[in-house]
Amino acid sequence: MQDIVRDLYIKNEKKIVLLVMDGVGGLPREQGGKTELETAKTPNLDALAAAGECGLHLPIGFGITPGSAPGHLALFGYQPTDYPIGRGVVAALGIGFPIQSGDVAVRVNFATRDAEGRITDRRAGRIPTEKCAELCELLSAVSIPGVQLFIKPVKDYRAVVIFRGEGLSDHVEDTDPQATGVKPRDPKATSSKGEKTAGIAGQFIRQALELLKDRKPANAILMRGFAELPHIPSMQERFGLDPVALAVYPDYKGVSRLVGMDVVEDLQDLDAQAAALRENWDRFNFFFVHHKYTDSKGEDGDFEAKVAEIEKVDRFVPRILEVKPDVLLVTGDHSTPAVMRAHSAHPVPFLLHAGNLRADAVKEFGERNCAQGLWGVIPGAMLIRLLLSAAEKLAKFGA
Image 1 (spheres, one colour):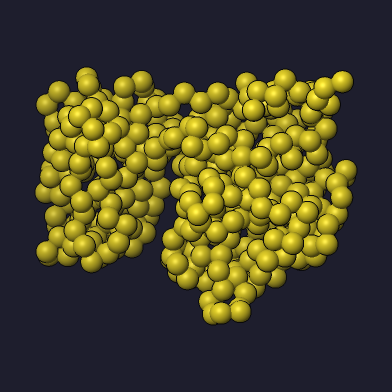
Image 2: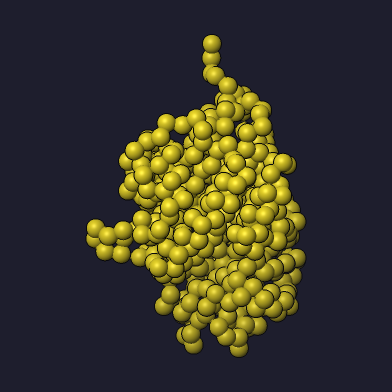
């Protein structure tokens, strides 16, 4: 079905901005209360919602909780179930690691365990990236016969390990139990293809724990997203777009690279992202601007801090409007309610702003308001069509 979009593509000079507040969807703290987005003071987003078209989107499908990579893949116009990607590859590409066909990359969380080996903190107190880099250097001493091993820092408590050798496979389960008070799982093959890699991962974990045993708070590791490099057609091939990613966190640079985006490096905050948007405005026609911390605060269970991050993005919106985008979409890749401290399957609000839309009755940007919007609930991968259409980049179909 997406081939029809490429066939109808019209090249013009119109510019599209996709602003993503990671994990923006939420839940009330009490029955009948407001979500984080509904609580936040967002005059700029409300004005855009009132002038545009609104709705909710499902990144994967009804009842399915999205991971970050699949959630973004949907926003870029790809049905995530057609292009399964593991977090390890996203992490490796996010830091610019030259991953090769046949490599297996795995996302690593530095974590804290107690004397009995139970996990007490899955993120090791969110150690800074500098500490993560120090620990990765320590783990570079791990040696496994017949395997070349690379362990690299990503950001904060996150790292990535890449296994390179013959006969490797990503058919291995995560060791992260996704809970505290329990021991990590052993790496387990999901098919006969993964048995060698599961054994290698087990050796890596045993040596890593020995090296980390006297470290606090990061005295353990959790492994997630065993992944090989997939082939995904680029956004240029699929939609005719020339896209660029303006993201701070490496993982979102990684998923952007998977779909052929250029990536602006060394961005540290919204100010730098605003400057990069201006500096690159003449070079591209699709701009992906990402803000991570709405998701981080939701995972921390900090309702008020998530509200503050949403308000921070609202104050940033006028800086996007300064460059006069022809089309602006504001949304999230998934919901991360602070009351759940995790991603959830709840539909994600979106607003679409352009000069050729039918404004609906929505006056404020929030979950329940957007549910009353023109678009209702749509698949996340269909948002790209709305963007292309609003930018007048799709020709008429048929006579």
